[in-house]
Length: 360
Image (tube, rainbow, N blue to C red):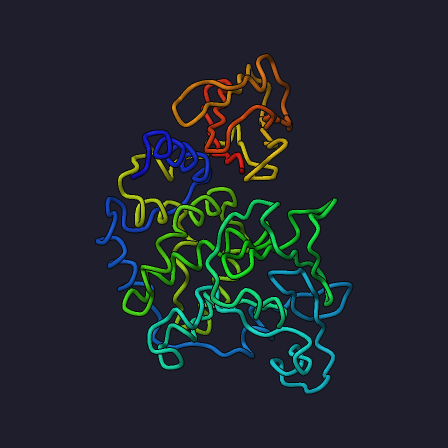
């Protein structure tokens, strides 16, 4: 059962995550009722192809050259017509390049090979072949650095077993036979694809596999708000799927309302709460220290405190006047027991909270 602190953290994060004016889909609906409405309105009845995925949906240009980028390693594979001008074969490179990753794994969809869910392009992303195979059907998780078996970045051979000395958020992580953590800039897309699949294909997805990940996925959704790039991709997919977008990319309140209906957030989806934002800069989970970035639209009086799971204050991270701009907050891990901590920031009229985990 979630603690009162955990529910408070989710609610506070949801407020900051909804910091944009947006259309709220099916206002007033929550839980199973909302998921049923989304299913009826957004489940596609036609699907695109892998060639559409590469040639149009995830096509990008690097240095003036067109190609696709692996969402797990950042590897760029150009369209060079070798070994074939067929888009799928072109980037596959006889097994050395890129194929499609089922974010919600194919093996976890009932009737593997026959369910329309397996063709839904909102769930498919370009992935380097080896990274795709290594992730397999592992669930997503936040993996403590010390428990990571392999780190993935760039072109093969791209793995290492040592903790990266720099640019750590650009790596994906494998905990052998246990879990997979995608690189930081893909976490939000993963979360919203997973919630989409669970909503659109409840007859095919397995709750026993999906449910243990739900808190991590929600945290990723909150930590990485919807971007114009996310919305642009959803629109490109919809062009091949009867105009059906991923609604979780259209309305940031849906994840909370559809999967965490017990959390009540006042005025969600209204005018932007842009005076202050708070995000984890890394690492999380942490050992030596956790870093957070507070961004202020204007100068304000700021007090930042950290609390343990029992609500006891364990540290004051900042207390004083802060100018407009970015302020780095650091929670020292020395002397802190493993567990969940909340950093609460009062910045002028805004109250912001982030959840941190001190690793073992």
